[in-house]
Length: 256
Ligand code: PEP
Image 1: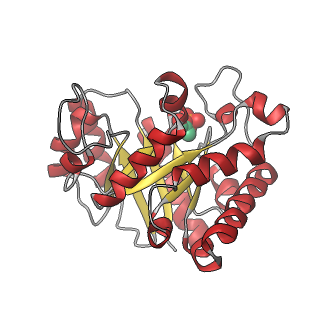
Image 2: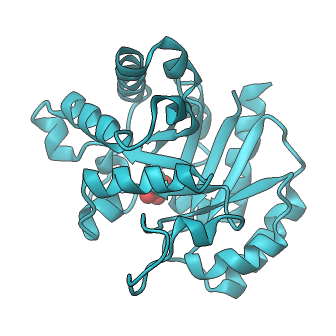
Image 3: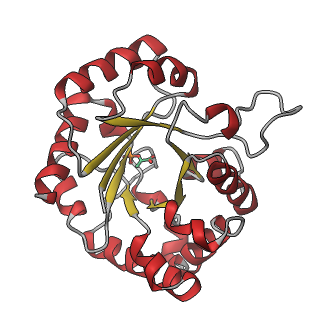
């Protein structure tokens, strides 16, 4: 399986800035065949960047999309419209869940719409700090994972990238803490156990599980060697080109 390094740019960069960043990153990176580099720019930059990107070196992701293909849904962009522009879409990010009120049902419909439109969903799941404190982590992970996958067929489950992103470890969270490799390993193991129980061992093995939460060049190596982790979802550090490039180079080193 490839190692995935995904940079989520969130609501940062103008189209011009995004284009300059991409230009510099493309220039700096060789083609690492076993590391799949993905950047998720703001939606307004997707079309121009889709013309600029070298898909042998990296791929584009959307940060969000709506589950209906066309219609009276003012302000939305559909997966149908994104088809051909992006290869991936982040779905169920905690900022979508907690700032924009997306629930598990909405997330499930988006995962299904992505698969229907041949866009790989990056399904984000993760507990909040208080859920962890109250011992609810396993239940939250099970609920978010199984409901997120509930609208797709079993044969499509291994196409989804699951990103474990504990909300308390995301750098923008107040008082964010670093997740320890053991904490991550435990949840990643749980994700695979749930997938095995519901969809079988082969699907559990084949489904990529990423970690995200305050990843930076100094902890990327440790996180990438957590058993069962197939890649990283990077927020803040992905906005600084030298740091993102370092993380990608770390992934390459860890792989070889
Ligand atoms: C994220 O928001 O997906 C994320 C992982 O952010 P950060 O790396 O800044 O914690």
